Image 1 (cartoon, helix red, strand yellow):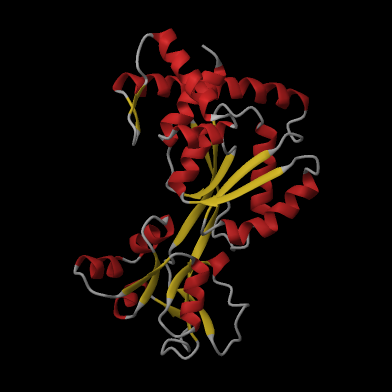
Image 2 (cartoon, rainbow, N blue to C red):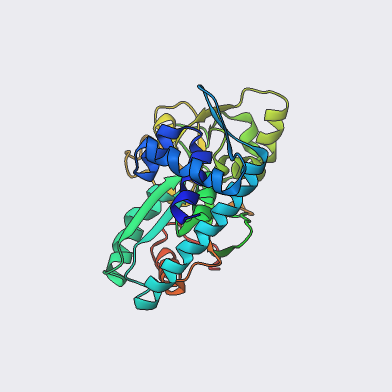
Length: 306
Protein backbone atom coordinates (compact mmCIF):
# COMPACT_ATOMS: atom_id res chain seq x y z
CA UNK A 1 0.00 0.00 0.00
CA UNK A 2 1.47 3.35 -1.08
CA UNK A 3 0.41 6.99 -0.91
CA UNK A 4 0.24 6.96 -4.70
CA UNK A 5 -2.29 4.10 -4.65
CA UNK A 6 -4.33 5.90 -1.99
CA UNK A 7 -4.32 9.03 -4.16
CA UNK A 8 -5.53 6.94 -7.09
CA UNK A 9 -8.59 5.59 -5.24
CA UNK A 10 -9.51 8.98 -3.73
CA UNK A 11 -9.34 10.66 -7.13
CA UNK A 12 -11.23 7.82 -8.84
CA UNK A 13 -13.96 8.01 -6.19
CA UNK A 14 -14.33 11.73 -6.88
CA UNK A 15 -14.28 11.48 -10.69
CA UNK A 16 -16.02 8.08 -11.10
CA UNK A 17 -14.19 7.77 -14.41
CA UNK A 18 -10.81 6.09 -14.95
CA UNK A 19 -9.75 8.44 -17.74
CA UNK A 20 -10.58 11.61 -15.84
CA UNK A 21 -8.97 10.29 -12.65
CA UNK A 22 -5.80 9.34 -14.54
CA UNK A 23 -5.64 12.81 -16.07
CA UNK A 24 -5.89 14.45 -12.64
CA UNK A 25 -3.16 12.16 -11.29
CA UNK A 26 -0.96 12.87 -14.34
CA UNK A 27 -0.59 9.18 -15.23
CA UNK A 28 -1.88 6.95 -17.99
CA UNK A 29 -5.22 5.19 -17.54
CA UNK A 30 -3.61 1.69 -17.49
CA UNK A 31 -1.18 2.85 -14.78
CA UNK A 32 -4.03 4.07 -12.59
CA UNK A 33 -6.11 0.93 -13.25
CA UNK A 34 -3.20 -1.33 -12.28
CA UNK A 35 -2.56 0.68 -9.12
CA UNK A 36 -6.21 0.48 -8.04
CA UNK A 37 -6.41 -3.26 -8.77
CA UNK A 38 -3.16 -3.87 -6.88
CA UNK A 39 -4.54 -2.16 -3.78
CA UNK A 40 -7.82 -4.08 -4.03
CA UNK A 41 -5.88 -7.38 -4.28
CA UNK A 42 -3.73 -6.45 -1.30
CA UNK A 43 -6.76 -5.56 0.83
CA UNK A 44 -8.85 -8.47 -0.44
CA UNK A 45 -11.96 -6.34 -1.11
CA UNK A 46 -13.52 -4.59 -4.07
CA UNK A 47 -13.28 -0.84 -3.61
CA UNK A 48 -15.02 -0.05 -6.90
CA UNK A 49 -17.85 -1.62 -8.88
CA UNK A 50 -17.00 -1.36 -12.56
CA UNK A 51 -19.26 -1.45 -15.62
CA UNK A 52 -18.93 -0.28 -19.21
CA UNK A 53 -20.84 2.92 -18.42
CA UNK A 54 -19.89 3.78 -14.85
CA UNK A 55 -17.53 3.34 -11.91
CA UNK A 56 -19.16 3.23 -8.47
CA UNK A 57 -17.68 3.04 -4.99
CA UNK A 58 -18.76 -0.03 -3.03
CA UNK A 59 -20.04 0.36 0.55
CA UNK A 60 -16.74 -0.89 2.02
CA UNK A 61 -14.94 1.20 -0.59
CA UNK A 62 -16.55 4.37 0.76
CA UNK A 63 -15.03 3.71 4.18
CA UNK A 64 -11.63 2.91 2.69
CA UNK A 65 -11.65 6.03 0.50
CA UNK A 66 -12.61 8.21 3.48
CA UNK A 67 -9.71 6.80 5.51
CA UNK A 68 -7.36 7.19 2.55
CA UNK A 69 -8.30 10.87 2.34
CA UNK A 70 -7.31 11.32 5.98
CA UNK A 71 -3.98 9.60 5.37
CA UNK A 72 -3.26 11.86 2.39
CA UNK A 73 -4.11 14.94 4.45
CA UNK A 74 -1.72 13.84 7.19
CA UNK A 75 1.03 13.14 4.67
CA UNK A 76 0.51 16.62 3.21
CA UNK A 77 0.77 18.05 6.73
CA UNK A 78 4.18 16.39 7.10
CA UNK A 79 5.43 18.10 3.93
CA UNK A 80 3.95 21.42 5.01
CA UNK A 81 5.59 21.10 8.44
CA UNK A 82 8.97 20.66 6.79
CA UNK A 83 8.40 23.64 4.52
CA UNK A 84 7.05 25.78 7.35
CA UNK A 85 10.12 24.99 9.43
CA UNK A 86 12.22 26.67 6.77
CA UNK A 87 10.20 29.83 6.10
CA UNK A 88 6.46 30.14 6.69
CA UNK A 89 6.24 33.08 4.28
CA UNK A 90 8.17 31.46 1.43
CA UNK A 91 5.96 28.52 0.45
CA UNK A 92 2.96 29.13 -1.85
CA UNK A 93 -0.28 30.21 -0.20
CA UNK A 94 -3.54 29.07 -1.80
CA UNK A 95 -6.44 31.38 -0.97
CA UNK A 96 -10.08 31.09 -2.00
CA UNK A 97 -12.94 33.57 -1.67
CA UNK A 98 -16.65 33.49 -2.38
CA UNK A 99 -17.87 35.18 -5.56
CA UNK A 100 -19.31 38.21 -3.74
CA UNK A 101 -16.00 38.96 -2.01
CA UNK A 102 -13.20 37.90 -4.36
CA UNK A 103 -13.65 40.39 -7.24
CA UNK A 104 -13.70 43.36 -4.87
CA UNK A 105 -10.99 42.20 -2.45
CA UNK A 106 -8.34 40.40 -4.54
CA UNK A 107 -7.27 43.43 -6.63
CA UNK A 108 -6.30 45.15 -3.36
CA UNK A 109 -5.22 42.08 -1.38
CA UNK A 110 -2.75 40.63 -3.91
CA UNK A 111 -0.52 43.75 -4.15
CA UNK A 112 -0.63 44.15 -0.37
CA UNK A 113 0.53 40.56 0.19
CA UNK A 114 3.29 40.99 -2.38
CA UNK A 115 4.51 44.00 -0.41
CA UNK A 116 4.57 42.35 3.01
CA UNK A 117 5.55 38.82 1.87
CA UNK A 118 7.39 39.18 -1.46
CA UNK A 119 8.81 35.63 -1.32
CA UNK A 120 5.40 33.97 -0.87
CA UNK A 121 3.82 32.86 -4.18
CA UNK A 122 0.05 33.35 -4.16
CA UNK A 123 -2.70 31.27 -5.75
CA UNK A 124 -6.23 32.69 -5.66
CA UNK A 125 -9.61 31.23 -6.57
CA UNK A 126 -13.25 32.33 -6.49
CA UNK A 127 -16.06 29.85 -5.95
CA UNK A 128 -19.19 28.95 -4.00
CA UNK A 129 -18.90 28.43 -0.24
CA UNK A 130 -19.56 24.68 -0.39
CA UNK A 131 -16.87 24.14 -3.04
CA UNK A 132 -14.34 26.26 -1.13
CA UNK A 133 -15.19 24.24 1.99
CA UNK A 134 -14.39 20.96 0.20
CA UNK A 135 -11.16 22.32 -1.30
CA UNK A 136 -10.05 23.56 2.11
CA UNK A 137 -10.68 20.15 3.65
CA UNK A 138 -8.87 18.36 0.79
CA UNK A 139 -5.84 20.63 1.01
CA UNK A 140 -6.42 22.22 -2.41
CA UNK A 141 -6.73 25.57 -0.60
CA UNK A 142 -4.93 26.76 2.54
CA UNK A 143 -7.40 29.45 3.60
CA UNK A 144 -10.76 30.71 2.42
CA UNK A 145 -12.52 34.05 2.80
CA UNK A 146 -16.22 33.57 3.45
CA UNK A 147 -19.20 35.19 5.14
CA UNK A 148 -20.45 33.91 8.49
CA UNK A 149 -22.06 31.71 9.60
CA UNK A 150 -19.54 29.03 8.67
CA UNK A 151 -18.76 25.89 10.62
CA UNK A 152 -16.63 22.88 9.73
CA UNK A 153 -14.95 20.23 11.93
CA UNK A 154 -11.20 20.71 12.40
CA UNK A 155 -11.37 24.13 10.72
CA UNK A 156 -10.67 27.40 12.54
CA UNK A 157 -12.66 30.53 11.71
CA UNK A 158 -11.72 34.13 12.51
CA UNK A 159 -14.08 37.09 11.94
CA UNK A 160 -12.31 39.97 10.20
CA UNK A 161 -14.81 42.82 9.73
CA UNK A 162 -18.50 43.64 9.31
CA UNK A 163 -19.63 44.95 5.94
CA UNK A 164 -22.94 46.86 5.64
CA UNK A 165 -25.39 46.26 2.80
CA UNK A 166 -26.36 49.07 0.43
CA UNK A 167 -29.25 49.59 -1.96
CA UNK A 168 -28.39 50.27 -5.60
CA UNK A 169 -31.13 51.82 -7.73
CA UNK A 170 -31.60 53.72 -11.01
CA UNK A 171 -31.05 57.45 -10.62
CA UNK A 172 -34.60 58.17 -11.78
CA UNK A 173 -36.19 55.96 -9.11
CA UNK A 174 -38.85 57.51 -6.89
CA UNK A 175 -36.62 56.96 -3.84
CA UNK A 176 -33.61 58.73 -5.39
CA UNK A 177 -34.06 61.87 -3.28
CA UNK A 178 -34.46 60.02 0.01
CA UNK A 179 -31.67 59.78 2.58
CA UNK A 180 -32.33 56.13 3.43
CA UNK A 181 -34.69 53.20 2.87
CA UNK A 182 -36.15 50.73 5.36
CA UNK A 183 -35.93 46.98 4.79
CA UNK A 184 -39.67 46.36 4.90
CA UNK A 185 -40.22 48.70 1.95
CA UNK A 186 -38.46 46.40 -0.51
CA UNK A 187 -41.48 44.12 -0.84
CA UNK A 188 -43.27 46.54 -3.20
CA UNK A 189 -40.38 46.94 -5.64
CA UNK A 190 -38.73 44.67 -8.17
CA UNK A 191 -35.60 43.33 -6.48
CA UNK A 192 -32.81 41.66 -8.47
CA UNK A 193 -31.10 38.90 -6.51
CA UNK A 194 -28.31 36.40 -7.03
CA UNK A 195 -29.47 32.92 -8.00
CA UNK A 196 -29.69 29.84 -5.82
CA UNK A 197 -26.37 28.67 -4.37
CA UNK A 198 -25.00 32.10 -3.47
CA UNK A 199 -24.84 32.65 0.29
CA UNK A 200 -25.28 36.40 -0.20
CA UNK A 201 -28.74 35.74 -1.64
CA UNK A 202 -29.67 33.88 1.55
CA UNK A 203 -28.29 36.73 3.67
CA UNK A 204 -30.38 39.30 1.80
CA UNK A 205 -33.52 37.20 2.18
CA UNK A 206 -32.77 36.73 5.87
CA UNK A 207 -32.29 40.48 6.35
CA UNK A 208 -35.41 41.37 4.35
CA UNK A 209 -38.35 39.41 5.80
CA UNK A 210 -40.83 41.17 3.54
CA UNK A 211 -39.02 39.83 0.46
CA UNK A 212 -38.91 36.33 1.95
CA UNK A 213 -42.63 36.56 2.66
CA UNK A 214 -43.24 37.54 -0.93
CA UNK A 215 -41.37 34.46 -2.15
CA UNK A 216 -43.40 32.21 0.10
CA UNK A 217 -46.56 33.62 -1.44
CA UNK A 218 -45.12 33.01 -4.93
CA UNK A 219 -45.14 36.68 -5.81
CA UNK A 220 -42.97 37.50 -8.79
CA UNK A 221 -40.92 40.19 -7.05
CA UNK A 222 -37.40 38.98 -7.93
CA UNK A 223 -35.28 38.62 -11.04
CA UNK A 224 -32.38 36.23 -10.40
CA UNK A 225 -28.87 36.69 -11.81
CA UNK A 226 -25.55 34.82 -11.63
CA UNK A 227 -23.17 37.62 -10.60
CA UNK A 228 -23.18 40.97 -8.83
CA UNK A 229 -21.67 42.64 -11.89
CA UNK A 230 -24.52 41.40 -14.10
CA UNK A 231 -26.96 42.70 -11.51
CA UNK A 232 -25.25 46.10 -11.51
CA UNK A 233 -25.68 46.35 -15.30
CA UNK A 234 -29.34 45.29 -15.02
CA UNK A 235 -30.01 48.02 -12.46
CA UNK A 236 -28.29 50.57 -14.71
CA UNK A 237 -30.62 49.53 -17.52
CA UNK A 238 -33.63 50.34 -15.33
CA UNK A 239 -34.87 46.77 -14.76
CA UNK A 240 -35.02 47.08 -10.98
CA UNK A 241 -32.94 47.64 -7.85
CA UNK A 242 -30.67 45.41 -5.79
CA UNK A 243 -29.05 44.95 -2.41
CA UNK A 244 -25.24 44.75 -2.54
CA UNK A 245 -22.42 44.49 0.01
CA UNK A 246 -20.81 47.91 0.38
CA UNK A 247 -17.61 46.80 -1.39
CA UNK A 248 -19.64 45.96 -4.51
CA UNK A 249 -21.98 48.97 -4.42
CA UNK A 250 -19.53 51.38 -6.03
CA UNK A 251 -21.19 52.96 -9.09
CA UNK A 252 -17.90 54.21 -10.55
CA UNK A 253 -18.59 52.52 -13.89
CA UNK A 254 -21.64 54.70 -14.50
CA UNK A 255 -22.39 58.40 -14.47
CA UNK A 256 -24.42 59.76 -11.59
CA UNK A 257 -27.48 60.12 -13.81
CA UNK A 258 -27.74 56.31 -14.12
CA UNK A 259 -27.13 54.81 -10.65
CA UNK A 260 -27.52 55.91 -7.04
CA UNK A 261 -26.47 54.11 -3.88
CA UNK A 262 -28.66 54.44 -0.78
CA UNK A 263 -28.04 53.44 2.80
CA UNK A 264 -30.54 51.46 4.84
CA UNK A 265 -32.18 53.01 7.85
CA UNK A 266 -30.88 51.76 11.21
CA UNK A 267 -30.51 48.97 12.05
CA UNK A 268 -28.85 48.42 8.67
CA UNK A 269 -28.20 44.83 7.54
CA UNK A 270 -24.61 43.65 7.24
CA UNK A 271 -22.51 40.54 6.83
CA UNK A 272 -19.44 39.41 8.77
CA UNK A 273 -16.48 38.53 6.57
CA UNK A 274 -14.19 35.87 8.02
CA UNK A 275 -11.18 33.74 7.20
CA UNK A 276 -11.17 29.96 7.70
CA UNK A 277 -8.25 27.53 7.67
CA UNK A 278 -7.50 23.96 8.73
CA UNK A 279 -6.59 23.64 12.40
CA UNK A 280 -3.65 21.46 11.34
CA UNK A 281 -2.27 24.03 8.87
CA UNK A 282 1.37 24.44 9.98
CA UNK A 283 1.97 28.06 8.87
CA UNK A 284 0.27 30.33 11.42
CA UNK A 285 2.43 33.29 10.37
CA UNK A 286 1.02 33.08 6.83
CA UNK A 287 -2.54 33.07 8.15
CA UNK A 288 -1.78 36.01 10.42
CA UNK A 289 -0.21 37.93 7.53
CA UNK A 290 -3.21 37.17 5.33
CA UNK A 291 -5.69 38.24 8.03
CA UNK A 292 -3.89 41.52 8.68
CA UNK A 293 -3.70 42.27 4.95
CA UNK A 294 -7.41 41.61 4.47
CA UNK A 295 -8.29 43.98 7.29
CA UNK A 296 -5.96 46.61 5.89
CA UNK A 297 -7.28 46.54 2.33
CA UNK A 298 -10.97 45.76 2.94
CA UNK A 299 -12.98 48.11 0.74
CA UNK A 300 -16.14 48.14 2.80
CA UNK A 301 -16.28 50.44 5.81
CA UNK A 302 -16.69 47.90 8.62
CA UNK A 303 -19.20 48.58 11.31
CA UNK A 304 -17.03 46.80 13.82
CA UNK A 305 -13.51 45.44 13.60
CA UNK A 306 -13.44 41.85 14.83
